Length: 310
Image (cartoon, rainbow, N blue to C red; front, side):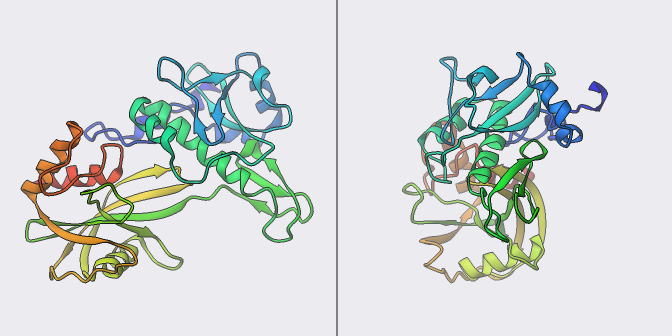
């Protein structure tokens, strides 16, 4: 059976900096999710259960994820099978019987985890958080309103009345840098820290491609029409469960018309200003022209990619 295992981290590019919430070393083991006997066999003394405080991570004194055992689990909680670690141990996380505390967005504990956890552990936490959050919000069937029960090791919920099947969702979000004449279009939202500018972003809507979503969102938010959209990189973002699809596009007309319901400001920045802002991040500072996104954000990777491609 071990020959079927693979490490998700192996598919990541060795030439790019780590992407936060990517690179888990837990094999998802899809081929045993529908096999209750196989999952039960993994629920042994060696099984690990990820400790969460609501939806927040619990860290050890050494700054790693705190893993307990099945003996520590709440008997009234549902147990999600996360997969198998490199030591061939089953990995699980609980869905508490009560709604987990904390909202769907990142709080102080999650921001701290992004700063201190190594890539594989941060990815394990991100996946577990997204799943626990989804299960906690889908205890009832959206078709008939009756209770749902956990199935396939926690990768499905099935209605107890009409047997409708429900699966953990991922919301695709385009996040894009736009270039014109050697400058980059960035915007800021009112909730950003003072001076922070980042790539524009928006959810992909039903019936459109990624490229169409990039063009629509850029025009809606900044009044800029784009062409030649290209994919750069993606990032899982478990707040509550998005996939950030990083893209780059080009504009022929630099005129900006800001939608103030979406953005507080949008500006074009030179390559030198972007380089300065990226360098300032490593010093915990803001650049002279603007503050760049933090290193764990895919927007930071997009800016660095643009600078390095020349």
